[in-house]
Image (cartoon, rainbow over all chains, first blue to last red; front, top):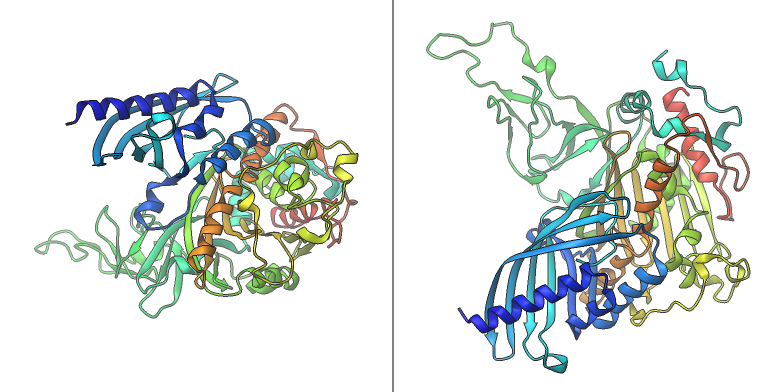
Length: 158
Length: 411
């Protein structure tokens, strides 16, 4: 195992979920390369070879649109997430690229105080080691939900 | 008379009022299962494209009743109760697959793909001991078979012999609006389920409510995908429970009714960094950019620009509904078209720029009216009756739902 690589990737994954959970959504697109793929799908769609996503973005601009819609356009009740990410496997592809696979669970906390296990699944990532500003960045992040069901709505990204 | 019809009276104003107990009562919910889902209605099962091969099956629900849908060796579609004749266990545990026969895991009773009981394990006993009496007729408790009808690649089922032919049930005008979307063979793109914390009828009203769309959904009004000043209309069909509403997006590129009326949904200053998502292709060729269509009690067909989907509305208790989404394109789509549909899928589903808000809104009504069983919602936009209309500033299709609903329920 490449310990330095492992630590660097785990640090990226941790910074990513803290940004979301701390409601710093404006920082979220910056974790991605300018041309990228971020999508949320279900294990069922993936296994059946069906391309549909719940959220699909192929550029940082599309991800920025998600954030501005959440802030200024869409109606939904105030809510926060708490991500737990674990069991991260990292594999180097080439000098500037790594692949990672990790498990996640997300608790959703509504403004009313109601908490629920909102989502569980895997992050399948392709990571650029020296992205903008020398930081690690996602070239690709496929969020695979274990369940095909989502309660009420999925506003904040996973 | 059931407990429902005895204790509950519909408001004297008729279709212009909807009493809140209708979304809250356990008795109403039970009566719906019998009189609507197991009564003379056509229940949506899915797309034929989900079962392309002989032996393909899927499991789903007609109301709360679990059913198996199969394509048999002769290529015909069948639908039967997912309940073993023996002890009532689920016959089919998988959501989909391909098989030659169906075997109940509990005691190994077997069925063919038409739902006929074909084998009872150890029926004659073992070594001359045990077994069933000679005159036993276990098939008398066999899973009930439903009549299946297909229309434009859509599968429907009914338990009743009295349900009229599918096209008549939908109504000719609404049927024509199905035909324009289901114009050629489709390709499945995938699906997911949105769980709504509300009664099923609140969602079905929401889809039929042409008045809310551009007021709740900022995306519709800001990007002029659906504004009430744009050309369009609403058609009500069948017994009132079918409808299609449509918008011609490019018919009024400069209207400012919303801005002048100070509507939140057109509050201005909102723009996309990546507007390519909203570049649509007029693939049907009639200028209709948005069409939402329903068939009572649980079918929705959607064309939002190039995002095509069917939605199956499944009741899961008085206050819980599952919305089963299946998105599709056409078999003739090239890679570019599929990519456009993938991008526009951002508009729909649980995370849809538009649909996420519907997920929230129906729950707001369920919660808001929790202490007001004896009060009613006020449904007089566009009058108090049910008719097709060129204006979408109307709740005519919501009233149409209640017209058909009350007939089935005897309310």
